[in-house]
Length: 257
Length: 336
Image 1 (tube, one colour):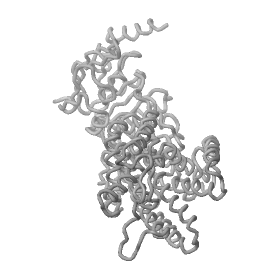
Image 2 (cartoon, helix red, strand yellow):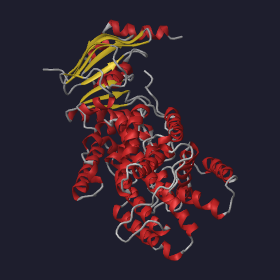
Image 3 (cartoon, chains in turn cyan, orange):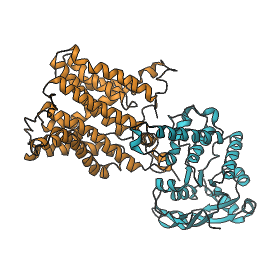
Image 4 (tube, chains in turn yellow, orange):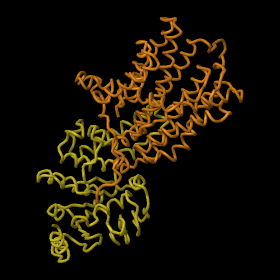
């Protein structure tokens, strides 16, 4: 089967430093892939490359067999790659509902000139969109918070809302940047359930995460980056025993002052 | 986002219009009518500023685009002999066109760069108006004819001009309101509140901002066309950066989060209060400036944020009043 996302020799330099160095990675449809590695291994840069925030220095990215190298962030998003950020990146001043509604932008079809008329079809479209947004909020378990302002949510819920907004774009591939960071165990459990549900609904998920326990339990496959290079790839059990991986983690500990 | 109830808005707007329509009956002061007309023109400029603000851009060039509209219209009538009624839409179109060309270059850089670039564009425009004889030079254009009569209606009196600008203002407000409540308006506010996030939601920031730049310029151009034929004299310095700063003040004083009501309230106050207090033209900017400084410190949300600030109407129609005034922090990239 063709992979959903495929990078070939993906490379990104910052000055003379290769943040991501010749990374070949394939993400199959409907899997949860974990991307782990010590600090500065290039995980977030990898996300920024795939989602079009950073230009690629060398190599290619293909999504559904289509070359998306060099596309802008909004174009990538429009193809169906959703993304939730590391720090809860939300429309803080808006309600949870409006946050998710903004995520629906890609699917909210309304010719601009029709807005001037406030015609029945515009109202129907709006009704349809609101219904859909409500469904997504229910799906993500934020129903009780729909009217709250995003800035008034607890941290864990803000992170779930971040995922929720990304889900509103109805992506085929969802990139989650450290979804469990800063969460206490209960919130982590909720988030794990949410991610599992997302996968079960047919969305492919790539997770960058430090929380080893969550990654090991959640992911079907794990890829390990170290100093910009991919050093291992395989099922969680295998990765946990991989000597190179263990060394990378322990080694990085020694390097830290 | 602050969609409100379209029906309710229309009813309120209808009532206000009815009231305004009878305004000339209650006064025969030409001076008062002049102030009202200027208020309407200023509101249109404030609306243009606020539309760009709704996308997270702050312009210092509103007066320049106002000038493009005014000069285009005046020249089309004076030199090409067109009717005002044809020059009016053409002026708006011309302004949008200039905004398109300028916007392609400057809209990409948000924040301080955009503020300075719009300011420079405004300065250049004033120089162009003044330097070239074609635009009447520094002496300006004189004897611009009043709008052509329609049947028995002539546009020489204040009252007739008042009705004309009222209609233009109404069209402007309704158009902008429709945009703000549409998908486009939602995308604009998404860009303003969090440009990075908006991008991952497949909003093309550049295109949406360029559209806002063009539409807001067209609004200012419309106001300019009217102004040229109402005032009948144009002079380059009417459209200088100083005026652009005033336009900002209209929106800030009223409330930056209120893209329509803000400029309405702000422009009315700034146009009327100094006149009513009989402040001299020399002292007036000092006074306005002082008021603005205190306003930004103590009431950054503008006058319309007062109800929320005091805590009234918490469950009333004002409860949904939106966000705090943010100065957009547009982080380029996340830390790796």
